[in-house]
Image 1 (tube, rainbow, N blue to C red):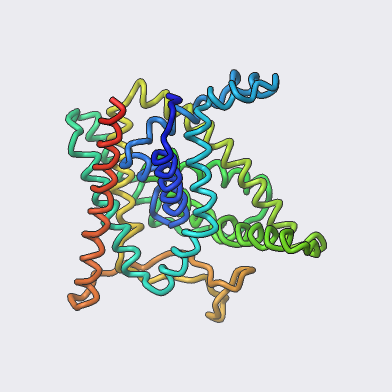
Image 2: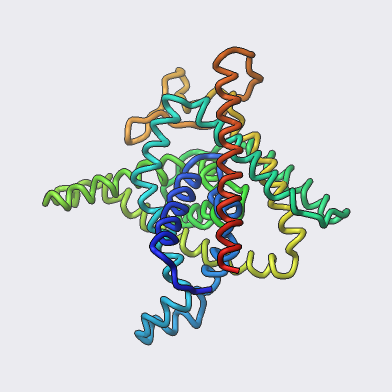
Amino acid sequence: MQSTRSLKDRMFLVIKGLAMGAANKVPGVSGGVVAFVAGFYEEFIYSLQRVNKKAFKLLINGRLKSFFRYINGKFLSLLFLGMIISYFSISKILDYLIVHYELYVWSTFFGMILGSIYYLSKDFKEWNRTTILALTLGSIAGISISFLDPATENDNLFFVFFCGIISVSGMTLPGFSGSFILIILGNYVLLLVDSVNALFDTILDIVSGNFEFIDNEIRVRLLKVLVVFTLGSVAGLVTFSHILNYILKHYKNITLATIMGFIIGSLGVVWPWKETIYKTNMDGTLILNSGGKQIITNYRRYLPEFNSQTYIAIVYIALGILIVLGLEWYGKRTRQQKA
């Protein structure tokens, strides 16, 4: 799978990583959908499952070039570079847009999910009792998850490691939103907001020569949480990739039908017309996280009134569909050029 990549291909890989990283941070949206629609999902899973015993032997023996080549290192490093950049840039832009233009952001994501469903279903011809059952069960699972009540925040490091394993499922399983699972587990703000911001602030302090953060117990604790969460995510990525590679190889049609079901079920999570429910005390006052932000616990969905704002939202839904169709076109063109 390792191949020589042009500068253009490398830039597009970083951009794809940016898109995956941004999608992974938004509740209800799956980075795996981006990989699937853009045409690099199978290479992504294939590359991750190459992180195995042989790879570790190469690494331990100091054969770094062989290790890098064996795991399709150029592909993975460029993709993860884009994801890392996304967490400190695009994801912050998304945070701003969701606060100020929430309806239009969710409308775009809703359109992207609709486009993803079209993309997956248009070439799927293996409909039978088994695949229809898989589609149904996947849809029920996706819908059920979207209506679960979130747990309370928990910074126990063993639980944080478990959160890392579970949350990364959104990268490997299209339609399964890892960030929304973190909301359900109660640790979305802790792991994707507070700890990431703590790392960002720490990097700025180190660059400026300020090391006072070492004595800041809250900052140090958040950094520990982020390290453990990252380790859990890596463990989850490798584990899920091996499982998915086997399943796709032996039960491809059932897996694709289940993935379609998950994506259909996630439509409820990204429904544009919803009211955010925040965490409150017994007296009704808002509970804030360590960064001073209101903690989201769930959403109340409703049907829209037909007004100018609704019509604009519908335009953004169409834009989301066009984005996915554009990604599909680019992915198809890239595959044809490689063939």
